[in-house]
Length: 122
Image (cartoon, rainbow, N blue to C red; front, side, top):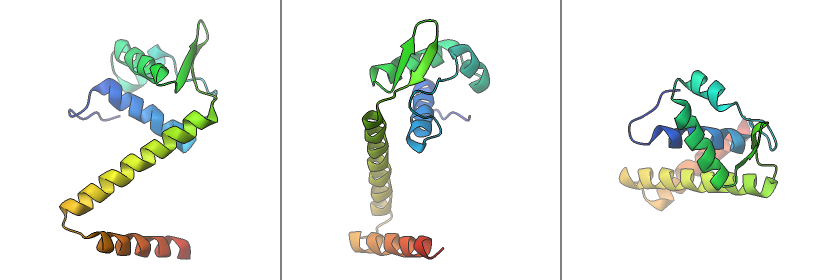
């Protein structure tokens, strides 16, 4: 994973795990890699992984079972909520960028509808 300097590494790791949960790559109840395994895989300090896991646990996206490891939440409503939140953030960023480029709402709608029609036709 390539990290950028604009966001703390632990947050980038959190975002990676959240994306995997939202996409279904990590399912509810799945065991996450151990701190040691993930730190080795991502080439970061284990404390960084531990911090990411702690923050995810605080957000109730994961839970830890002593001696067993860290697991993705089994609460499907939490996962659905995460997915909706991530979608809203993506849409907001998209519209803000389109606005910066000088597009009107009607122009953006037109571009989006063209894309949807092209996708439906495939």
